[in-house]
Image (tube, rainbow, N blue to C red; front, top):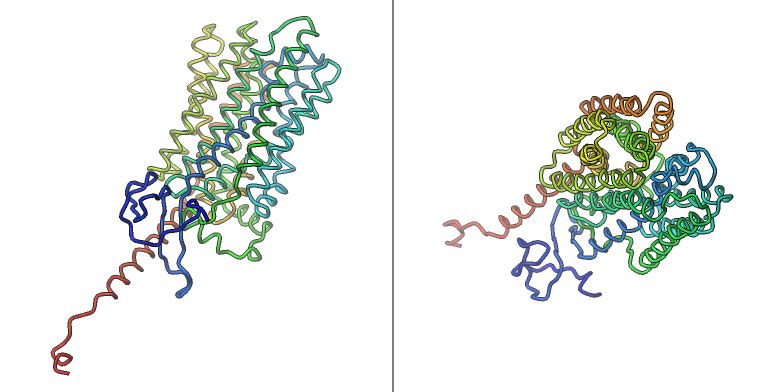
Length: 498
C-alpha cells in the first residue's frame, strides 16, 4: 500500500502537519495518525484510528455536487415573474418547480436511507450525480414556451438527486473526520448546499433579463440551462474518478466500534422504530422541520415579496436572496466550529433558534418601509441565524441517536423539513395573495416561536460524546495498567536470601 493507508505502531518522535501534538519516527510521514489501545472483549485486537488528508477532498467534492443540485432548486423561483410569462402559466405552477424538490423527498427518503446503509456513500454519490446531470440536460431541451411539462420533468429528475444528497453530510463527516472535526465537516457539507442556493439567487436574474421578446428570452434561458448542465457533467466525472466510500481505517473510536457491529445485527426497520421512540430526537425532528420549512417558504416566495414592495427589482431580489444565504453560510461555519470547541449542542441550537425568530420578526416589519438597503441588512441577519441552524440540527440529531445511522436520522430531519416547507410555502403564498407580505411573514413567526419552545424541552443526551469519552477513559486506564504492570516491585528480604 501507499503512504495514505500505512499505519504506524511506533512511538511518536516527529510532529505531523494535521496534529502538532502527534509525533512519529518516520520523517516523511504526511498523515495524522491516531493510535489507541482500548479493551475490546478482553483479548480482542486493539482498535486503530487514523485521519487521512483525502477527507478534505471528499467533503469539498460532496459540497460541489450539493451546490450544483441546490442551485437548480431556486433557479426558477427567483425569476418567477419572468418564467410565468415565458411558459404562460400561473405563479403557483412556477412555485411547484421549487416545491417539487420538497414533495419528491418525502416518499423517497426511506428507500434512499436504506440504500445508504446497505451500499454506502460512493453508490449514493454516483446515483445523485447521475440524476442531477440527467436533470440538467433535460432542462436544456425545455427552453421553449410550450415545453413547461418537459422543464417540470427535468426539475423532478434533479429533485430525485437531492434525496441522495441531503442525508449525506452527517454520515460523511462521521465516516471521514475526527471527533473534534465532525461538526465543522458537517458544516462544510451544508455550506455547499447553501452556496448553491446563493448562486441560484444571484445568477438567474443576471442571465435571464426581463424582456418581452420570447425568442430572445428563450435564448437567455437556454444559456442558463447549458451552463448548469456543463458544470453538472464535469462534477459527475470527478465523482466517478475521485470519490471514495470510506477510509480504510476509521477516524474515531466511535466509528471503529460501529464498524465492529455485524451487518446481520443491523435492521433498518428496527432502527427507524427506535428513532421514532426517541422522544428528544422526535422533538428535534418537528422543531427542525418548522425552522427549515420557514426558510424554504421565504426562499421560494422571495421574488413575489420583493416585487410587491419594490417593482422591477428582480435583480435585487436575487441579491437579497444571495445575502440571506451568504450570511447563513458564515453562520453555519461559525456554529460548526463552535460546536467542535464547546460541545454545547442544546444551548447553541436553542440560542440560534430564538435568534432566527427575532430575525424573522425584524425582517417582517421592515420589508415594507421602502428602504431597499434595510431589507438587505435584515435579510442578512435572518439568513445568518436561520441558515446557520441547519448543521446544528444535523449534528444534534447524531448526538441524540448514536449509534443509529447518521443517514437515517438526517433523513427524518429533512423529511420533516420538506413536509413543513410545502405546507408553509402554499399557506404563505395564499396569505400573501389575500392579506399581503406582513401577514404571511407573521404566519411564519408563529411557528418559529412554537419551534423555539419545543427546542427548550429537548433533553440533551449526547450519546456520541459519551461513547468517545468512555472509550478514551478505558484507553487511558488500560495504558496505566500496562505501565504499572511493566514495573517490577522491589525484591523482598526473603527473595534476596533465596
